[in-house]
Length: 142
Image 1 (spheres, rainbow, N blue to C red):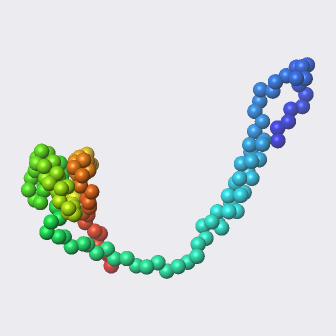
Image 2: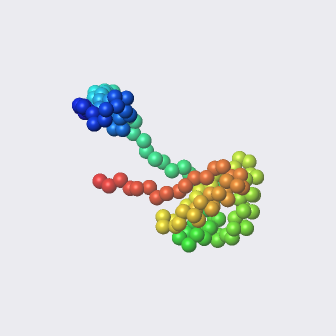
């Protein structure tokens, strides 16, 4: 606790230029104690047995579209190399089909995100709403 005994100046109403941190420390200690008491209560949950899930891949349909992006940023539409203009045309054709086919987007793991982002942006601008990312699932060890 800080306390000032005596004064150098004779003026009793002089402005004190020191910050009194005692109330701040008191408040922080009270908050710390409250958090130490309430956290163990908040973390405790009732134990339940969660269901087990198995990831089963959907079967591809004939009208689904496969789009791939390689490490250099080249875009393939159903295994055929496309230019940006051709890609826009094919996206517009796909957007007009009702119901829209699902687009399976495969990107090499070392490709720069900018190339994948451009493809996703092109699909969004073209009006295609069903885009799925294809990944290689991790195999369980053991």
